[in-house]
Every structure is written in C-alpha cells, then in structure tokens.
Length: 154
Ligand code: HEM
Image (tube, rainbow, N blue to C red; front, side, top):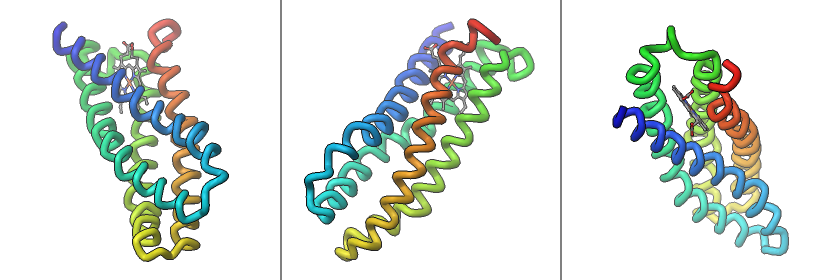
C-alpha cells in the first residue's frame, strides 16, 4: 500500500512536470519570443532545453518505473489491469520513443549549430524539435486524460 502510494505520487508528479513543461514551452514561451532577434531566441532555447531535458530524463525514467510498480504490486500484473493501463502504457512508450528521437536526433545538431553560431542550421533543427514536442504534448495530454479518468470507464 505504501509502495503503491509513493509510486502513484511519483507517477502523477512526473507526468505533470513533463507534460506541463511541454505545454508551457509550446503554447506560452514560443509565441512570446516573436520580438527577439533570431540568435537570441535560439540561445534562449538552448538554455531552456538544457535545463528542461534534465527533468524530462527524470520523468522518462520515473514514469515507466512507477507505472510498472503500480501494475505489478497494485494490479497484480497486466492481465488484471484495465484497458486504460494498456492504452497508457502504449502511449507512454510512444512518448518516450519520441523524446529519445528528439534527444539523439535534432537536439545535438541544434546545440552544435548554436555553439558554432550557425543560426540557419540551429533554426532548422529547432523546427524539428518543435514539431516533435508539439506531437508529444498532444499525446501527453491524451495520456493524462486516459490515466486519470480510466478507472471510471475501463
Ligand atoms: C510508461 C508506462 C506507464 C505505465 C505502465 C503506467 C501505469 C499507470 C497505472 C497502473 C496507473 C494507475 C491507474 C489506476 O489507478 O487506475 C497510472 C495512473 C496515471 N498515469 Fe500512468 N503509466 C505509464 C505512463 C504514463 C504517462 C507517460 C503518463 C502521462 C504523460 C501517465 C499519466 C498517468 C496519470 C495522470 C495517472 C493518474 C494518476 C492519479 O490517479 O492521480 N502515465 N499509470
């Protein structure tokens, strides 16, 4: 009981930090930077990502770990878990896959572009990062709805 309570607390906080952070970056921070010079915008994103991705890494490890603790210690395995757990599991793995794609795909090119003051290169990679974060924000919001409401319908 204590283990499951700790696991659900970690799970909910990790989901909030990851999805909330992406939501803020995409819908609040990005449209607020229009007045800045492109290179200042790119340098700001470099600093934002280097801080935010530390938290995303923690969430990417904590979410499945705490989720599996709940599945195996609270629900007695995937066999007796509701459909919402299976949907959440799948969506969670897709979200993690997309983050890894972003982190090892366009992110190093973006960082190198900013370090070399190659602004067009950095901007091209930032565009790919933005697209992946946009998709992951939508999947993340759906996953939160499924996770939080699932026990009422599955
Ligand atoms: C990666 C594999 C994942 C597994 C195995 C998993 C498993 C679980 C389980 C077993 C529960 C408890 C459900 C219940 O009590 O009916 C839960 C709740 C929840 N999960 Fe997941 N989950 C995963 C990923 C995610 C992700 C990626 C998110 C969001 C981005 C998420 C968000 C939530 C939320 C919001 C809840 C409800 C928490 C609450 O009751 O306050 N989960 N998850």
